[in-house]
Length: 258
Image (cartoon, rainbow, N blue to C red; front, top):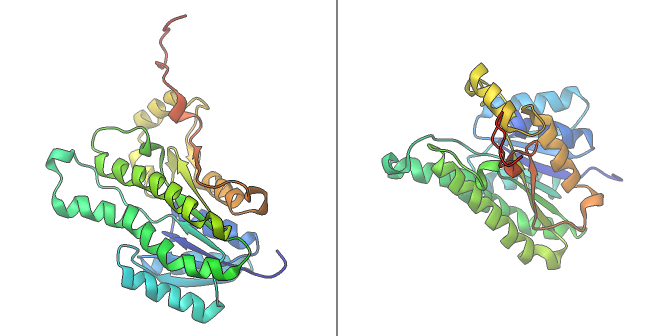
């Protein structure tokens, strides 16, 4: 790009968010690295600095609109504007819905869905001010369209992300701001590695048509495409990056109908 532009990434302290932040920096963006964990945000910012990039470490709780606004105030004070927003911050709380407390339900929705709303609402005036077509990419999940027991609140929040992505895309199209979502499948990250026991890994490998778990960098690749000039005519879409998991209705290791 001709001159450095600013990208904001939430949940950028590790995993997919970190991969997106580092990838954007390698593309020449100045990256505001936002995470509720200040030490994790600082770690990612240091990685970008070590690679010759420009980064600003921010402690932001996306579920708190005042914290979100403080983060954007710092970005504007440091760099003046925003070109790209990657809404990645999210949490998981496993429970049957009938046993879920009010507090845990609201916590998942507050971070995973309302937090994306707060971030987008604060970013939109800055994206418009850029005047050259801003980009919002929301990180959804394959569990927005398929689910499993214990994942009800997470699936509900990510289904909401898909719907909000379409609504924002329609509202912001007149400003040439595109809004899309990336829906990761089963990805190896520091958060998920403990869940992928050998038995679980084998089961997923049988269920995923491509036959293997994903890497955070592959999700970042999809995000980088959606913020690139080549994706200027794509908006309101949910891009599944899941090895084909969401299309597979087959019965692993069984013959059916053939």
